[in-house]
Image 1 (tube, rainbow, N blue to C red):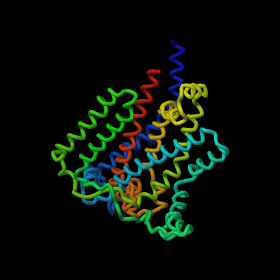
Image 2 (image 1 turned 180 degrees about the vertical axis):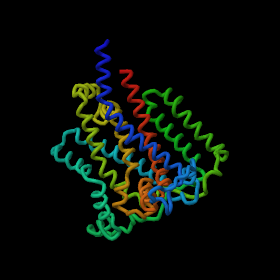
Image 3 (image 1 turned 30 degrees about the horizontal axis):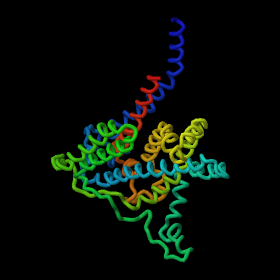
Length: 372
């Protein structure tokens, strides 16, 4: 008993320096950023030796989501949602597809694996510069059809002002509830084969009911807090999404390929003996077994999608409103406009969005360890 207590004391003393450093340089700075976001630190006197900081509460956050000057940030926030969705769908889907092809041991597997994984070794600045040349309006991808005798393309990959999937910012609550209902229904449809009753009662039924209620009574949701303005999916972001998927599909490929290689060959042979086809083996055996890898890839890529500052800066520059991102706006607001309080508020919004992905994952991992 005494020896166990001594071991715990030694372990605590060993970890104490790291605990202090993390407390000061991580959580201390997060707390300081939260405090700064609730002040009026900014303007002409922001860089004074002893700047004046007056506490104003949540005014900076209210202005970001409802004020006239926050319209650019709101469009950047919508862009970030599309960046995240497209990156997850593209990188996870393409990476899984490549991993399945390589798992079948084609000739030159080692070379192909290196080729697909190589883009991940590049920094966002390097890959952004390459893709900026490739997507130039008068060159790169647009002139490829000319080599085959067709008319060159004239699509403005990084500067298009067109937008699709537009919605009124006043209807934000309705849009979010519709999206939640759609996700619930899709999750239910995904699991309907394994447990139809649970899928209907837990996911499809509540999702359909929520969507119906929003359709019938959506006008009763508060709208006065938000300005009437249109936001949507800017086509200029397509080039950035393509570059990001190209860079990170190799990463997800490596994750899935390692997972496939870790599955016992006996299990695969047993599935084949039971009549499973190649597609059936991956659909019903291999991919479900790699659920933890899928969750990890989603968490990591979601986190990356919130830090796309350097790629966007390299591809479109800081002043292209069509391809804006909250991380880029945070940098410009803080270090170009010297509006430190508003920049801190944007940073905290990004921090909270990242926490929506990371905290549930950490909680689930902790619970699994407790059960184990």
